[in-house]
Length: 379
Image 1 (tube, helix red, strand yellow):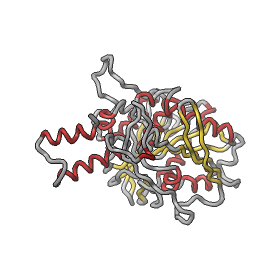
Image 2: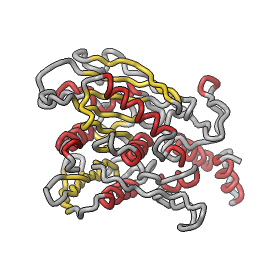
Image 3: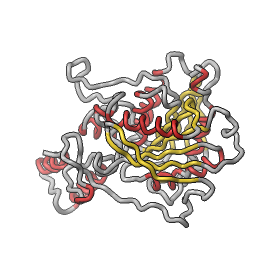
């Protein structure tokens, strides 16, 4: 029995008709919520999107998002190059888009060691073009001088094109999607004038959850992580625990009794700097997940961090900066009051965006570039 059938049977056992009337809308809402993070199993996908027979692959409801047109407000500036490529490894093949800004004078370009690289992991149902348009990270690349790579999830791996953050086999080093994405990034670093000490990864929703997995499994590769509307590392190990974590219950993967042989929990141990954005009206991935990301990150730093909080107006927000004894901010969190499941300050040409700001893209970049280089050994 799949998860959708389980939910409908539970409702029916309570005497609720899920096929008509008001409860039909409830089941539709449940189905859409599951699909938004790649968990709505049991719904037939179109033949072109059907996943290959694989016990680790789930069929989900997929939504195609068209690439922005050449005249769209969020289109990539003509100054740089936005090219489509692919990368293959034992774990599979993934397409990706790479943005290379045109040569120009900028603060980041003056470093002889190469340019920074920002890896952007899209959310469910999104594409590289869609995510680039919504986040406007390419525009910032032109202004500050850095490369941007947008890996694309394959529909054969997840029919809603979600990164498989909730599978235990995709939360470890040397296997699955973490190994595939790390290999892709290493290939880009090897082929372009990138400073390997300034490689950063950010994502939205399922992409944010996978970005945190990468920070934990490949800390020598990623100097910092940006997580928007995501979930903590190893917050889930299967579908039921993923659903619980998304709704703010059983976070940190506590689906079994601690200490028992089937306890699947893993703990974040790597002190990788993290910046977190999360709306407190996010009903897809509850805001408590953002709080737990901050707790994980703060605990991973051996030295105690001091926290300072400030309030902002416009789109009201609460920002907390966690700094070390040297005054370096290593964990930063933004609670966006009244915001839902969308990229803060994003452009409307992309999906899942909230133009009411603050600008998550600019703030993440500020956080990344303000960190000391990994090669200095001061992290």
